[in-house]
Length: 104
Image 1: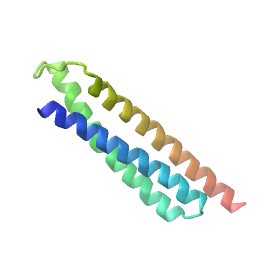
Image 2: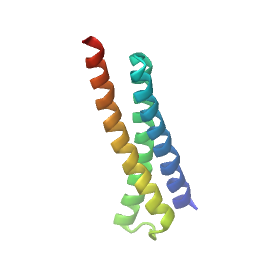
Image 3: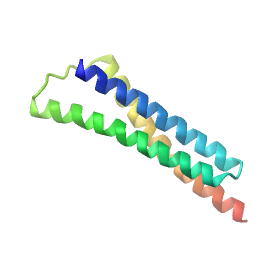
Image 4: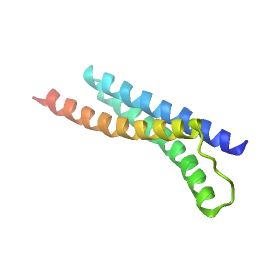
């Protein structure tokens, strides 16, 4: 049951991170860079929580302290985590680009 909780935490927090990243881009497009930066921080925080649980699963698997069976939901969680990471990186770049464009 613990593994399922960790998996669901990854999915939920990675999803929150991605959503905040996309919202940050929308705020930046409107010129609201203060809100965009707050959303990027929220995205980073949520991604960190997801990463922590992902690390717990990997560590337990490596130490053989718990049997980790690769299931569809575990793959789904890993996919969400990867997408959230890329979304955050792209959002940071988009916000920076939009800030520079606003200066011109």
